[in-house]
Length: 259
Ligand SMILES: [Zn+2]
Image (cartoon, rainbow, N blue to C red; front, side, top):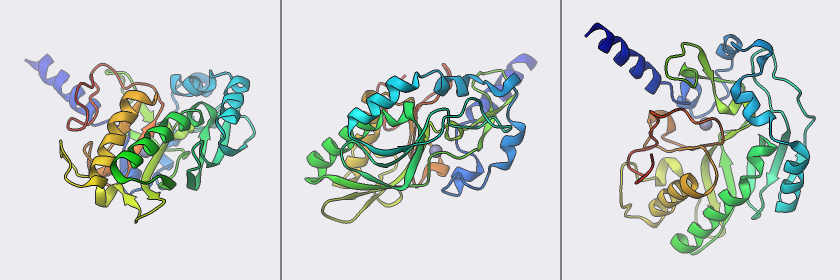
């Protein structure tokens, strides 16, 4: 009985350890960098999260990104994370993606994440054509790279170590709104139909279909929507970080068949 209650407490603590934190609750990750200073329990800073980005071979990655047609600037490579455990091993600053979508602010991300922009944007454009009869020209974000922790333990179930957000490695960005060639911007806050299996508006269907297809087809690890929690009420969080573990569930409504 006692063991069961301890296990339950661990589970609750773990499940509440999603990549949100106070910064996401404010609609941006920019204000909560301080706690990250305590968040690097790995000798030399080479955490599994860092290695997940750093182990991607940069020459082939940058060649793939160049071939995608994206417009970007290559940033100086970073051999190891900073004292807080954060950093972007092979950073790029993307101003325009492979399908011509411009980003504001420009995406400060790792090359390994940037090469996913091609499948991500293709899905967005296909859904814009089929649901809205237009294409997407621009995406506003709440930012990509920022050194920030997330609430709860590290990636394993019984660890008590704090976690670092995938934003801290340039492996995530927060999509706030999408501007089409015609019509007003589609915003996650106003147009996502939270909890709706079958959205009644075209914009709601567009956003729901994008979220589902990004999970299934883009190569991303996590796509969090307003269905996930209140901290994500105004953005989609996209990342190619490490999977959280066997216990992880994505948004219950918008992920039929998701493990
Ligand atoms: Zn995020």
